[in-house]
Image (tube, rainbow, N blue to C red; front, side, top):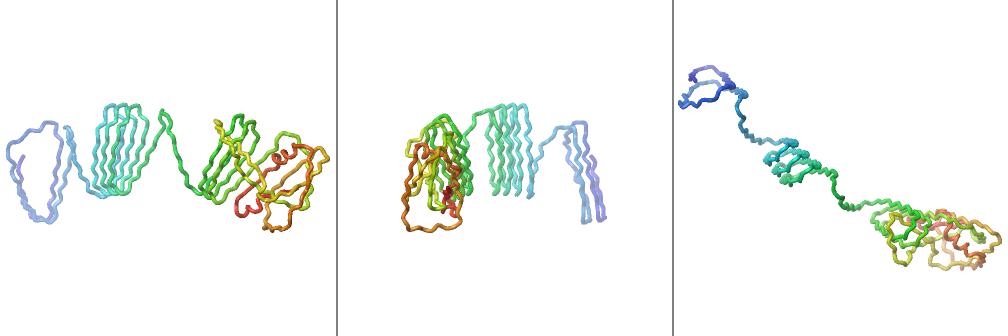
Length: 351
């Protein structure tokens, strides 16, 4: 190495330093270095340093980044040996960390990540592995953190999932099909404002159970489809002085103990009972063998007018006990509603 002394009075001086690789080992030099004195009177000096690779082992490079935005992407690929813990300290404001957990054939090691940035986004993909999993500890001091967890199915037993729904509208559809076993009580608690209940009443060959329905909503619509049974029809002749009569539906519960049922389907029966007012006696003279009685429920758009007159008594003579049973169980589909526009009258009985 030679010492070069240069004295230049020019304004600009350019210095190039080229570091070239060597194929031989370095030899220590015990001699002291000689200072190079450069007198430069220029205002601007440019220094270029070119670092070329050498055929020796790589050294550790420490990089400290104080920038505002730093993006860190970590790709964890499967290896055949144990994993080593990775510690990352980032002082930037925004840092994005992507963690991909792929299956490995060995035990997993703990990964500690400390992030002091304000906003940190963490994506975690959990894939099934053939070995035991190791806990991953993440300490995040940022203000906003978003965590995405994808849990894929494994060959283990299923767990119970509890879902609580507080929405305003809930639709409940119930299809009651005939079963050959005993019925069980069904309890429904609905806290929504609007609830629609569809009930199909079909005959069964078993005893009936009590069905309790609790509805706390403001408006509830109940649709009841009552289908006729496979029995003979009876003749019913009714003489009514008025053209239109009101039919009220009173849904009451049976005071019997509920019976357990292992079937998923439950039959719901609705009994149409009169209101708590005085009933009128209807006289029916039946001279024919077969008479069909149809009930049509039509809505009335006008308000009801109270009548102060007393009800008239009508005598009814029925030659068969089957007539009353047929009138109660074999009518057309009946619609009942508790909505304010349709609450009065509830139904119309037309003969």
